[in-house]
Amino acid sequence: MKKILLVEDDAIIASGLVYALEAEGYLVSHGKSISEAAGLISNNKFELALLDMQLPDGTGFDVRDRLKGTDTAVIFLTVIDDEGNIIRAFEGGADDYICKPFRLRELLARVKRTLDKHAGGQLALGGVIIDTAAGKAYFNDSGSFIELTALEYRLLLTFAQNRGRMLTRGQILENIWDSAGNFVEDNTLTVYIKRLREKLGGAVNIETVRGIGYRVD
Image (cartoon, rainbow, N blue to C red; front, top):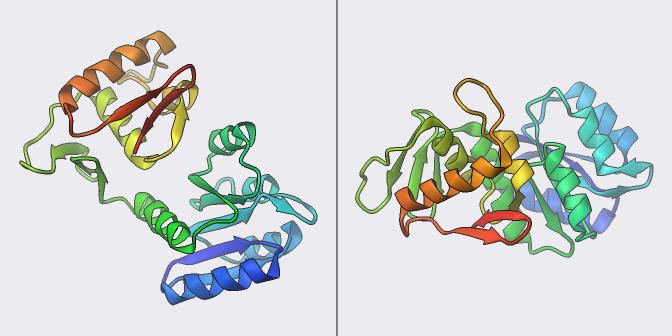
């Protein structure tokens, strides 16, 4: 049974989330503040943390900092649909965020997707299946193998792990190092995106967000 840490000070939201998550088979520990969360973190190992951005004694970033060095995935819950906070969350290692008020089924789907991503196995993106254990990608309709370089594969995997989210060029570059461990330059990213689009054809739509980065739904 996977364990989830929920840090949310709104009693109504928290009770609804605890009920829904437990109905899905998760074991949920709920804290209303950073101090309560700290106690739970020190005594438990969590697969996922759902963190309210605004807490009585600080922010969700403070709780996330206490989770550094663990394998706990992080999803932020926030009423602040602000690009700066969102980018800060992702740059700090968050896996996802969802704005309040949210649809419960959407949140549950994001929880499952995040847990599946951390568990490994297969990821689906458009008409492509990625076998993360084997490090290979296939077209879903034909099952044929897609010939990708190591860097192209990491680029595809980055999009699959962040499906539906806008990624800045900087965030993408942090995830794709060449085979020698050297950082890929910004102007080189455009070339690799072009090559990946050509190899995937219409199976995956890599959308350019002008002046910011890319998104794949």
